[in-house]
Length: 366
Image (cartoon, rainbow, N blue to C red):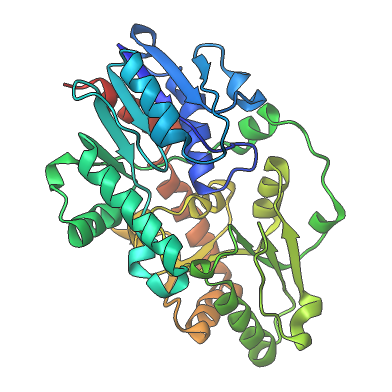
């Protein structure tokens, strides 16, 4: 079969969606059934990162404008070349012939759950794109039951065309070896710190985490610093704790794993997640996790085999509750060790190879 994959976003600086696409591309060629198909990568620009795997057929679709590549150029490609399947792992899907099987991935509906955190026009655009993709797709991939339920609730999508395929988690050694090496910096030479790693937009609740950290400093006099790693979109930091908060900006692969490894606790107090890859990355490296008790996060950290939680769940809307969840681990070494053990067990459920195999199976299914 001729399978086309649309990639119209750069993969060099990877956060959630970019990490998902990159890891799928890294693993598709390793799964059963790959050799029986031709897989084309359709993209506005062929970058070095797309050239890493010679088993794909790269096709650069030139377009003079920065916008409308999908609607016009990609649609033209789909109508003028006979692809059996188009897979859109992110963003808008093009117009395709009726005979072409269209599969899309929808990561989450945070703009519906948290409308006040998105500008009016961006929210309207995201809603239009997601509705359109959901209705035009033959099949929809989602990373969690939570996202599936949101699609059914908000857009009344037929549950039978929604397929849950969990994301994976990378291996620290393999990722560092395969990445372009970036020497560690002095910002990694710290001890006793609480870590957040991810984007800095409002739904990630960084301000709530900072308030929780302030509460811990005032009421429990903890010796820790707070490391905020990732793109900084502006945090509100009180002067009295500014010296104890380190903002790193975007971190490279080896720095990311170094930060996870040396952190005392990883905290992920997001208001909404379609999945939550950093939670599993922390568990993979052996760092205990505090995360929110809403959306997909309880699903991701609850082991279905024994129904045990592998992280401390907190209410993201109550900074004091976040603080108490963190302190529960700080003061209880036995709990910390138990969470590390459960985290190692929990993370075995997830792998990018499994994600790629299940995705390819869905692509080529009748």
